[in-house]
Image 1 (cartoon, helix red, strand yellow):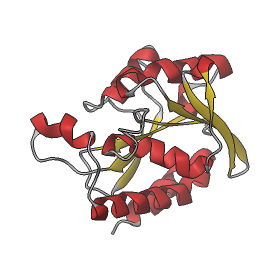
Image 2 (spheres, one colour):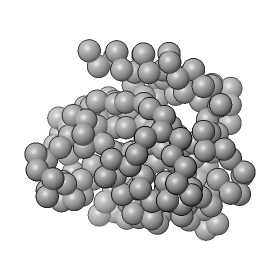
Image 3 (tube, helix red, strand yellow):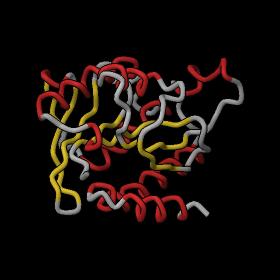
Length: 190
């Protein structure tokens, strides 16, 4: 099923703008090229973009990470989208900075944004995830502090390259050619 909604996860506000937890926002910002507008009914910033011959809606929830589901559910309900039409882009501490993985479904893996989206969608979790590696602090009790801080210059460069690589396969993702998209994306890291 073709992707109709691309959601980038992050936290609103200047103090969070360049933190690792906003990697999903960075992706959508690169895609939107400044073309997002505030939409109260969707509790976020939204816009439209053409990718691979398809029109996709973009969403950056402005509800803070832990309440991302409210914005996603509002847009899904309004446009009557199927769960499989959603691509959620988020930071991933279990991948090194610069790694990127695409998958469908799965649990939340401790990511509070994903946890809230799954809950808001009634436990349905068969949406696509684009996981942008931001690295791991080394110890679980340091995760919150880690994701709410800026990456080093070399980590930022690696994450930016991962975003560029992911944008390059997005037409395949949008048109449901996931096998080819995964092959290109996952083999570009070797």
